[in-house]
Image (cartoon, rainbow, N blue to C red; front, side):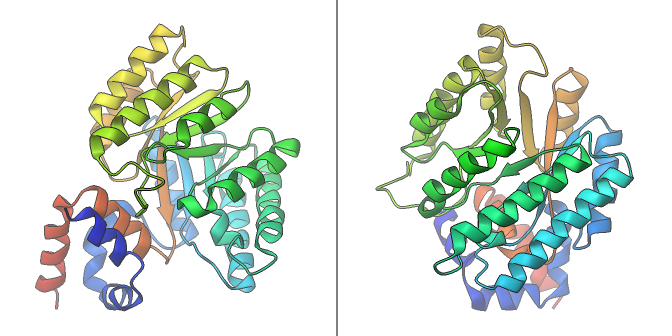
Length: 309
């Protein structure tokens, strides 16, 4: 019952101003975001890789309506890729990019600017010896994001896609993208979507996730199973076995700070596990979506605010 209100709060400027102005919120923020600076992200990446995990880094930010901010986001990605390469981490770490953070929402020229900026990041990633995955956002951007993906894959076929099982359309999108060389991250979805386009009941979202997993595991691409749900982890493993997939022909993905013991367990069992590691100053929307997924954390968050006033 708390999920929808929390997702609405994620877009509240007043609540954002209140929370981000209080340093006390850093207690729970640090559980999900290792820091605001590039150096923080690179250090956390090194620690995760040393423990046998892989990483995808997300410089936080979205819904950018300012060209200079979009350019700054691109610069941040170029910087982190340079540092990853310099420290020998890029073999096991890639980057995830939200197109709305690099200009997609700019009036009139958004798609063109986002494509140009994403291409710049892809080029830098290739030079660093790694890859880019395009994050998926709310349903109004799905067609635009997939269109940009198609353009990028002409020159950078290694570019990853993200699909969200709570959308009605996703099983069909999985079929379209389950081809050789195609990297597809399947997640459940974390935005506040209307009933007309998205499943509202958790059980329906889960059933859709399994249907999509079946398509991806049976396809010729590289599935990236983004879930913390133990049932989905088990189902993914069973589907991989059923389809004759060896370990390393797919991977599991989990968020930084969530089920770290399970991340290590899977890695120690020989599975490839990638940790989604966000960083930067624009952590508010990301935090609220994490709270919406795990409302039990809300009481901890509120206690932190009260105790530090």
